[in-house]
Image (tube, rainbow, N blue to C red):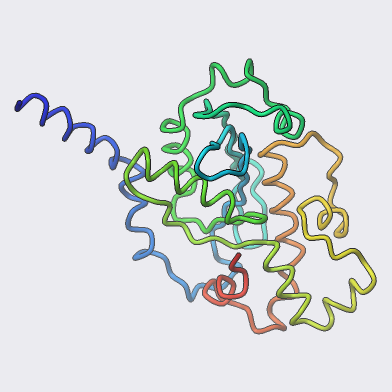
Length: 234
């Protein structure tokens, strides 16, 4: 009996050790009053087997670090994840990841532990970020017993808020398409989206989109991380 208890306790200890354990105290360490230019961000994206939170799973994560509005291309993260659910033919058409690509991929536990280490104390950025956050959060709770603590900025929500709040922003885009998917907005802002679609590329496109929005924020009274998080919630 004692050996069984020891084994169980050892598994629990493993789940909350290292970067995941440190991640648990992020909310207490985060300084919300810091100017946006001084914030560490991580723009990220996931590829999934589908959009059903209960049945589908992550198959890749791509991310790039930013310091304020400056993209740091040398600090990036891209990993394939062995899926916990079946690939769907319609999904393969989108992300172009096949069974053969993923059969030797790392486990979600390995990739998520390294992803949390990569994030550190940074604020996440994503487009329709609630989808990516919910999948990461669900997997972390299942594997480690703790959820994702990082606050997140949604570039789709930020775009909509700016359009409604900044007349200069709205006039600049008057008569243009209001489609809010990532690639439609990227084309609107002159961002190249002709390359292959994957999590790393989408994370980089999202980072560039965030860059485009930053100059409009000060005139709207958004200068600190706290104010940014208030206006960019999904």
